[in-house]
Amino acid sequence: MFKPRPLAAAVAAVGALALAACGSSTSGGSSAGGSTRQPPPKVAMAQKVGPGEGQLNVVAWAGYAEDGSNDPTQDWVHPFEKATGCQVNVKVANTSDEMVTLMHTGDYDVVSASGDATLRMIYSGDVAPVNTALVPNYATIFPFLKDRDWNSVEVNGKRQMYGIPHGWGANLLMWNEGVVKTPPTSWGAVFDPKSPYKGKITAYDSPIYIADAALYLMKTKPDLGIKNPFALDDKQFKAAVDLLKAQRPLIGEYWADYTKEVQAFESGTSVIGTTWQVITNLVQSDKKVKVKAIVPTENSTGWSDTWMVSSKSKHPNCSYQWMNYIVSPKVNAQVASWFGEAPAQSGACTQPGMQEQCATYHAADKAYSDNIYYWTTPTKACLDGRTNVTCVDYSKWTQAWTEIKG
Image (cartoon, rainbow, N blue to C red):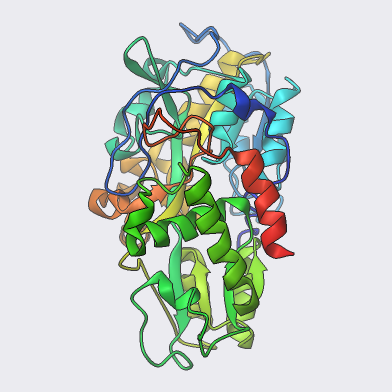
């Protein structure tokens, strides 16, 4: 099937966060985006799309820009080249930090960034605001994915998009039904120090997983005052880190490559923990063990990827043509099906064979999406709008994650 998606095993490369400024914002869960944040550096925005420059340099997650070399039936790059004359060169990135570093070089035109990287690139000036009027297929992107904290900022009182939403998914709680006889309903199942599944609990391997602990504390320890799991002051951050340090002896293995989590559940080395819908689908289809996955009572974190264009793009016309093409109904459906995610394009769900895909991944389900706290880069300026405290930025999240894992 598709290649593993090595998301956001973050380290370093967080200097741009210091540029992320004050103001307020909301992120995921039941709160919608759309509030204020200090404007990023001024970067010119494209005003028209002309003839292609003949080339396009792409940074992407594995599976987002297939040219048939991995599977001859999966090729949406060559049709784009034939239609536009833009020769596509793809650099697959393994982490969000690698994407940030690559885009900073100025050698690449577009990137498929996750929410733990987008603000870094916006506030470093490495990506440009996107003129969505030049991307016709943007009009039919699901509205609940537009003008959110991980893909836009407020400029002159208005939300300015810095990319085109591409695909998304939730971080779920999955368990082996043959071992975990009492179905869990809470993330507390992976934090219980007396868990009978000690040594067989799994968790996502990234600093951004600290937000999962914060989300659990937000609902179970309201006295901490956590309103956004990505906006943590020192006290809140310490509580989340302490919870994860206490969880560490329970963890059998952390995962970043989802094929390894499939193997861990099928071999029995993991019986409960964080997952993605695509992992659940794979384990269920293999039928080696019975698993179930839910959004627990505390809700979930999640990810939403965005195509962004470099502020130093040498091929801006090809870049805009690519962004429009990759979120077109047919191609977005191809990518979502191959990759295993909810498409951002509403028209993708009307494509042949996509009805089940869109239902399984809740693609059109705004209420489901509203329960997700999408990854957003933590910044010193509190993303929940507080101005009387300084929040812990992503550089300290990466340091803490190293300490947690030991």
